[in-house]
Length: 266
Image (cartoon, rainbow, N blue to C red; front, side, top):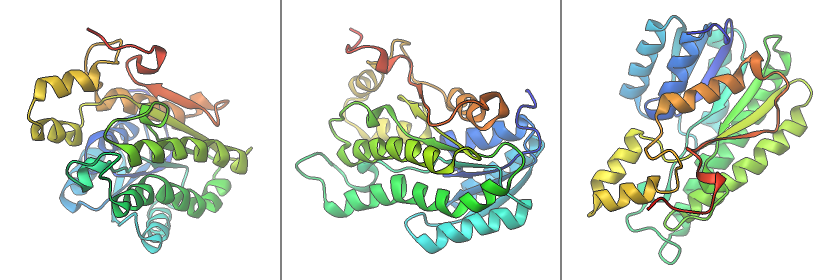
């Protein structure tokens, strides 16, 4: 791999599996000095840490509940203490309505589910960015924030109302944070389409008609397949790198072409 993240001290939330793990491991492979892995799931987080170390970076695990402000602040402080500073915050952690409530849709969605989705997807990203800001401003290693949004924040969704609304809010938060932290800290977001993460595969396994659901999830992709976590990680790591030194307030789609048209593949 390249060394485009050489020397950077990085924190990735939601890194026990899926896109967060891919970003953490790829960052290590691209020369990051250290990676702090944050999640609620200790076994998965420790597995990611082992992969990060194998890829050449120092690794630390911070277990945190991102619905708790005190956990978020502690997460930032522990990451800074471990690494001696912070250069990149990747707000990757997220949750979707269906994980918290079976059969969630516009008519049935419980307000507690709405609140929980917004707590993790938006409030946590805001609080983490706010807590990280003094450390990022102090960095001399190309400081940045990278947020994980979604194409669902641009287009409407059928059964993920809170998720889509929260990702739209995160897109706006990304732009506002870029304004607030300019010119010292760059802030950008990536928008995945349907990615073959463990969470997506578990969802597929839970439905009655797997083939129909799979076709529905990938039908708007001009590239007729699921995306891979590593394909998202490539974009996230680019946004964290000095190769993106003139990129801030930007929203990068990693969606197989979903947002390029208004159709569904036959």
